[in-house]
Length: 254
Length: 124
Image (cartoon, rainbow over all chains, first blue to last red; front, side):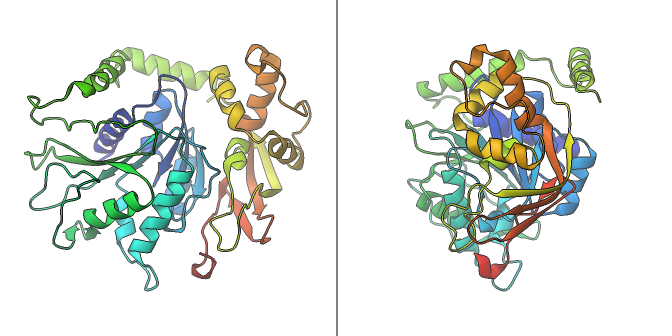
């Protein structure tokens, strides 16, 4: 489970395409800080928000590097404009489609979330949300400027994932972008990421992994550069990686 | 809660609160935790930091000494200044206490270093 979580996080961070310098990232639904650890490993700083005080206490216990807040996404993100260089969220967004309390209105909560999120991120930055793949059939791509009309919601792991509602509310709040699906033809390996852009220059949506490469547009060359750069770092769990982590922790006096 | 986070935090998600900034810190327990000094990150953060809010927050938690009253010129080439900023932003942490909204006086408790920004339904 932890392995899968960090794989999802690493792919989400890759899709975030942060500049090659230390960045401040917001982790929405940070839980015990697994996704944040991936950010730390890549030299970034993060602030995590989660609704579970229990999970946040676990994060404190695990001595994650990020700073933590207890908060509800549906009530908005309480930060000054332009605070973050990027936003990452692993398996958290679909909770907003749920009405856990009788007074919860998912459309209102989604809009509040997306609009306050738009405000607190730097222009041109990205927000990447990993979503559980839905069953049984999955469209391979949805673009916000041409949303596919769908019949209602799909039940996934007891959660209702209403992509149409999510994309509609994100668009209303000013976001552009769309859905990136990795390995769309595999039931096991399929991964979905909602990849949103906050203004700035028009950006091409990255292609999902394991999709046809024949129709790759030249605008995506810069994206593959990023992958090479990241591969150049020490692979996880390798000797160099462990030594580097040990040294870092030692410097911090832990 | 680091003062870096505090510097970005507002209470304007409460209905009727327009600015909600800066939140006042009422600290009961403050810790200084060593964090690796990263001059690039501090330099990058400086233009975004509300310096007067940082000064006030640092003084409120008893760690305002040694922090210049204003951002100096060419801060990136002054390691002493960057280290003072690094200490205030990254190393000073409020463990227990509360944050108070300057407009509504609404209090947000801080427990185990984590500010509780949850609201009640009638506040949104």
